[in-house]
Image (cartoon, helix red, strand yellow):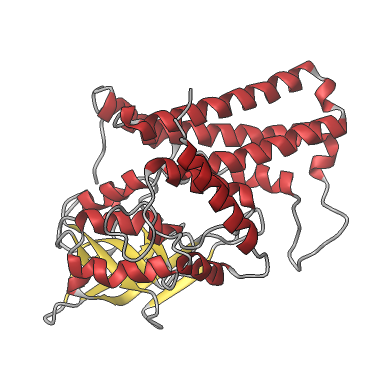
Length: 383
């Protein structure tokens, strides 16, 4: 199965590879790298005709760019939430004034975004959120509540927040999608969450009367649930193919470790390595199939189930092929943290969360059952 890359696509691949080879610089911090990408027109390539100053790429060239970016070893993107989640949402639901205000800074790499969805009391049940936004007489919203697992909140300039704007409303009713500036000392507090990997990509965010302007409500007051669901539909797409390039690199390192340790002599280990390779190929074909327009409403949930479990099993296999050495820390300690993990150990620990974040496996199976297969809804106890 082939996605049908043309000669023009392959010429573009050479261009992208050459540019990345010339500009990837490990000395740049992630915010500076966003501005380098923006200046060269590499942000917002999927935004369609209204590219807001940056180049516009067709679907196959978007795939090529995502794959070459992953292969290049370029820094992890800190602007992907603004580019791949906020921007498509504004293009679908925002006003022209909102697009003109917020898209150009994203395209330039000047403003970074985070997502204010999950809450500690709601878990994967987004409709159970309790953060509220009350409107003052001047039209300003005052937001009170807490969000959790907020990726990159410690770096972000803005946060899109799903909050309850109708007093007494329940579930998906009475919610609004608000664009909130993060620079509000005393009104917004960000607390990093230390993970077992020793890193802190996620944060708790506390809103204590934080302000949002009336003109920064996307889709209109009370329409937040529809906007929020639309955004989740943008969360998976071309980026999954780039993710799979990274997965392939990790699998290659696990195979190499199996050879070095002698674990590859075990027929069970060999079978598991071959299975990981075969399943990764299937994930790629499935992603290409759905990008080609032949997918269904459950495609994002199927993709999440596939890669979450696959990556978790890869982390377990990385430990297996290392044997006893997998439980021992490295000799050199490069950072002043309680422990330092090598790549395989980090893969194993971080991948434990793959079947939880971004919508747990249980949630994905419920979506497929109810929305795609049309099975009866599970009984729900609403308090």
